[in-house]
Amino acid sequence: MTPKKPLVALCPIGKFVFSNADAVRHKALIQQKLRACGVEFVDLDGVLEDGLVKDQKHVEVAVDFFKSKNVDALFMPHCNFGTEGAVGMIAKHLNLPTLIWGPRDGAPLADGSRLRDSLCGLFASTKVLHKLNIPFTYIENCSVDDAKFVEGLDTFVRAAAVAKLFRKGMKIGQVGLRIDFFWSTIINESELLEKFNVQVVPIDLVEFINAAKSRSKANRAAYQKEAMRLREKFVVEGFDKNEEPLLNILAARDEMLETAAARGLDGIAFQPFPSFMNSMEAYGNFMASEVSESYAFGNETDIHGTISCLMTQAADLNMNPSFLAEFTNRHPENDNGVLLWHGSAPFSMLHPDEQARIGHHWIFPSPVSGMVHMRLKDGPVTMARFDGDRGEYKLAVGEGHSTDGPKTQNSYLWAEVNDWPAWERTLMEGPFIHHVAMSYGHYSKALIEACKYIPGLDPVVLG
Image (cartoon, rainbow, N blue to C red; front, side, top):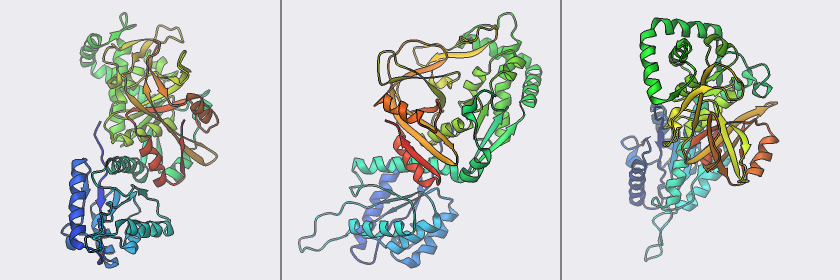
């Protein structure tokens, strides 16, 4: 996947009172720390004197400059005090995720005077932000080298990346209709567009199947070579007598990737059965596992699930793919353990000690092959579900870690959370279903913080 970091507008705040030299010194320390943390930013050096906003007359200059740079978030560190009116107006005009923080003030000098009153300025500026109804993120008043600052900065950057998804808008390709008996994936397409700038792009399943089959025939020799390589990498079952279905799903993968790129999609919601399976004479799970390395992928036409995957990927700064899993079984021995399971995780999630298997469906006996079976790698995981009914939308968020558990079929991971019975009750009472986006790493704080900047979406903390 292509990493996507938000561009932060660094807007250092000073004031004509207190030490200007100390404010400039702290601005430089902040710039140095942002670079060390890998934050992409633009600042006001060369735009305003000392690169600091010190007066309300600086508002227009700062806003125009940051808009010209197409920034995604705003950071206003209070370097010696706070020009509160400018803080409020800049945040109001940019209307972006906004971070407020100031360096912890040192002891008074020998004569009792002070170089700065950053804490006092923060109180004034946050009052103005409240007055103007501007949501913001606050990091506790601390040193720039304090772990609290680094953690808070990281959380804010990831939250800003999630919020950017909704600000720019998401395009989700719906390949095929909702499966008739999956009422739990019914969504309000118009409401998603109106409330969250999510565009559902219908893609005709018959046209998609025909195009994939034509691609398979036109590139038969290349797909036959790939099928041979596939048998060296994975355990492949069920295509010995007739390799045509295997070639078809390889072609369907490429057709879906090309369609997504051509239509500018961010994610895909796919109807995996019965039409695709019957026509291709193979399950589409291998295809889904491959495609999900590049695009958020929601099986069973789960559009809310695809949005959930996009959100966890954004919180991970698009460094790794996500997996639309299901909460399926409680662990047979661990009361806080649960099975994360579904048909097609990205192959990059494969456990290093395991070999993936492409084979038959274990629930529905059939000669048709193409299902993916693999244990997923160990590590910390974040789980999230975007969902809603009757115009009210929520994001359920929690964290856990892989744990030992019995072998099962398809893509799976046993995860341990802090209090599964509490998770279970919260999810059951709605508006959620069993599908949940899973990403490796712990990003729940960022996802919860992002909800501040997504009007109409309320976070629900699991556990």
